[in-house]
Length: 318
Image (cartoon, rainbow, N blue to C red; front, side):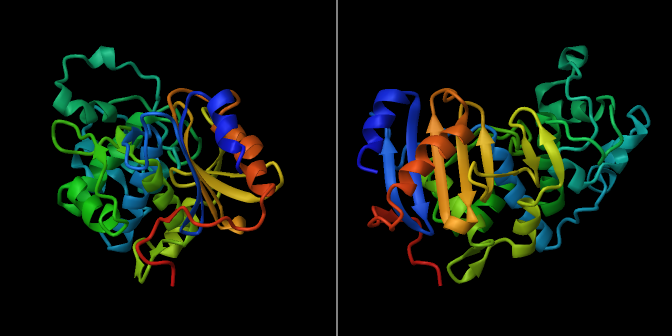
């Protein structure tokens, strides 16, 4: 591990930060010049996985059901000018990226719609596939899920996130953009520090538990990180509930949240390991390759736990 900072600085110059934690013990941190453990960095589509956690919390509290239809949450979906399939898309379909919408439908054709009603435009897109049958990576569908979540919880989504997720994890320093109506942009726009990214991975490593509190049910965590379909582009891994599901090059089960430009939270349950990486731009070979071929071998060279640099929890797991 002693040589890893030199390797990162010399050969991986776009990497901004790396945090390796076994359970809540931070064993290794690397920060590029100008970045530290509190620096907010854009995590791009890692945001989707955080939205998934909020959906899980809402499900646990009875605000939502995974089989609930969009028309129950957004009556606007009943508009007769929309494809009739739109009203039957379920929460599960959104979570598994199988809503069926044509993700390539051009917004320009509906440019007269004001920006604060952009989410309503997403309802008017054509359906390419029967909902629930085919994976298609679609940012607009995730943003629509965020609107549905806000309708279900009947409160400000940012406040809901602070009270039920970020607050308990002691994540006070974050930024998450919202649309003109106050809906969190679910597909992207969240910024976090690398340590706080690692906390989210640790929450899932601990089956949704943080200290004495069960923040999100273990059942939902298991569903989130189980293969629901084969997934596909842009990552090429199987897909759970807005989390990617895979295994390491040595065959260990793993799951991860990934964002454009090689942002990643990578969790290996068998090793009790969480990896968080941020980068200025895409790492050659991709973030998953970087974790498997650079970071994990560095840990393998030092199988005994290293001393803690710091802890992710105020108190260790109980």
